[in-house]
Length: 112
Length: 112
Picture 1 (cartoon, rainbow over the protein chains, first blue to last red):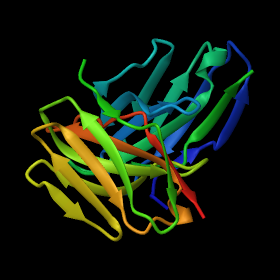
Picture 2: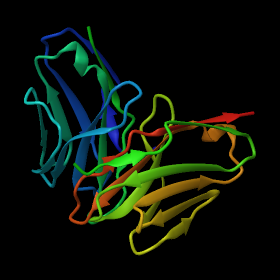
Picture 3: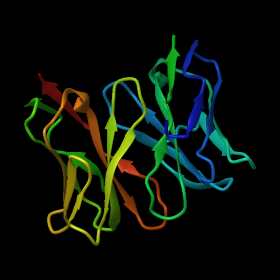
Picture 4: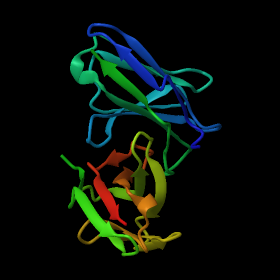
């Protein structure tokens, strides 16, 4: 158990819909990262938050947004969903400095 | 752009043999490197890390080697076991708590 909790584990929704993925980081970790992993692909960095503020942005679509709340949990919002958005979405958290990121078990999103 | 990549997409080894998974990185500013293991349906799991001021680090049955001259990273797994079957990712991090950049991954298959 990495200490990072993601909900839901599975999500099936229709094209055009909007979903929210939730992540609770490890206790004490201020950084939260979101990654997208398509079938048999690597992990594509989407966005990072540090202590409530956006720290870095990757290849995140304009239809996607995220935020980190005062209690440090984070949500990733995906809107106007397309079939190609079907993927595993991982959240990771880390402490200060160059430390390893701990990953949650992911949310498998299927857009039909 | 700068990226992290892997030499081999798949690797099959006999149980009991040693495995070597390679990774090339191109960002000379990266100073922290991590190997992750991802089993089917699970999130990436930290295996071992190494900072740029080192060229070798050993863990339990795993060794990471870093060659900064040629920007090459390798993961050696001794006495490979069926439980080692997974996809292995290398990741790099620059100073400043920037997000981890992942390579595409190498699938390790252990033949019993």
